[in-house]
Image 1 (tube, helix red, strand yellow):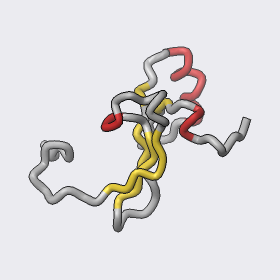
Image 2 (spheres, rainbow, N blue to C red):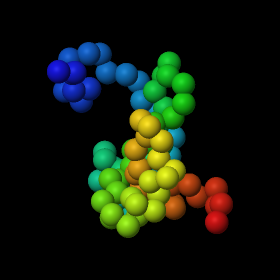
Image 3 (tube, rainbow, N blue to C red):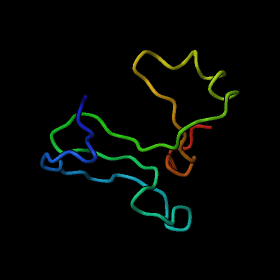
Image 4 (cartoon, one colour):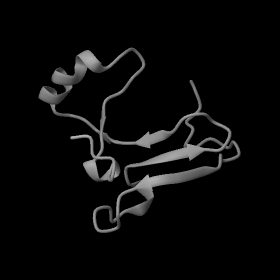
Length: 84
């Protein structure tokens, strides 16, 4: 069985939070949705909320490729990058 990265005894990686929600929106700072970088790793990591609405999952399923997951983040996470 693969190791759980959260409970693993490996040395923790250095995480830099690039963006998360304001305190008024996210009162639990440790577990907010956000965009993060890990030193020495290419790309970004995004913490999202799980999508459970079957209508949303069904509508977006054609856009979810192999190995990809559907998650939700509030629009505020992308502000001021308004693309509406």
